[in-house]
Image (cartoon, rainbow, N blue to C red; front, side, top):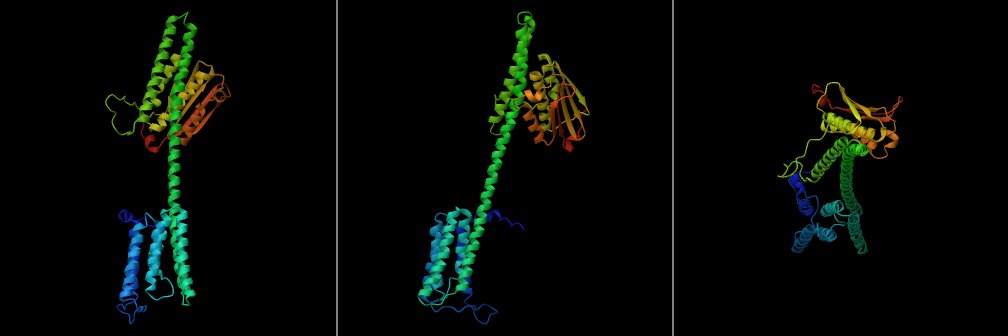
Length: 409
């Protein structure tokens, strides 16, 4: 069974207040045990001779003062506070004419042991437990040296309650420390995941644009003397790709530095554009085709609005695959197929080149694609085709709510 959580107002009560309340309750119980209550023929415990005398009342006053002072110091000086509570218990016990420190007088000490073990370092909790047990042993030893009777069983019971209180506090301390460790690990993992996500976005965005720029620049260099107009068009394409890449990087940096994602952009801030998705495939294909590698896009199934993370991941996988074709395949064309299935959206990129994508891509392209698909619990394959060339396929599961919303192609 799970322990019921404390109400919020009770959590605001400091530990010292609980200890003081326990002392007051135990003191009241001590008096009640020595008077005849309704329905009883006699009192449960006979009162000592000095219990109601002026000296007994003075000892009671001193014990209560020490206990309340110890309760006040529990948060700042736990060892001193426990010493005062133990002294108060010993003082009050001398007023009862009994052979052992009673459980009622030790109740406040037990509660203090719990709070110290729960909220302080373990060595402090162990030290306070040893002090409490040492006082019990010293009490019994002193009575034995004086030839007085002792209550061995009663003292063992009190010692047992002290150990149990410390164990409960130590368990609470360990549970809280474990929870803090889990929260720290979760925060670290969240930071790592976010860094990997940003790294994937940066790689997918920059790698594709740089590939197009390199292809256009190479074409311009080859025809700059024979076909200056074509060279000019290629360099214009290089400029356009460079500006788009810089704009994308600027948007990403603005998004990263924006402290509150919900606030409206301030006057003069660049507006953050929506994330890219499969709807941008035609633009991507046109830009790559203009760079010299023809991209044929084929759609299957009823096109529909996808969740942003799935839409972006599918687009990035296609974009990175096309980038690998431009950089490594040494071919002039590739084919992109997007299939909207009932429970999945599947993308496939194939080419008839040299089929070296898996061995030549020494960067993070294929690794990033696998990570994207794994995070979405999908399926990913990449490798040479038997008939030549290279194939990249990814199947991303689509939630039922999104699958039920179709958009005509």
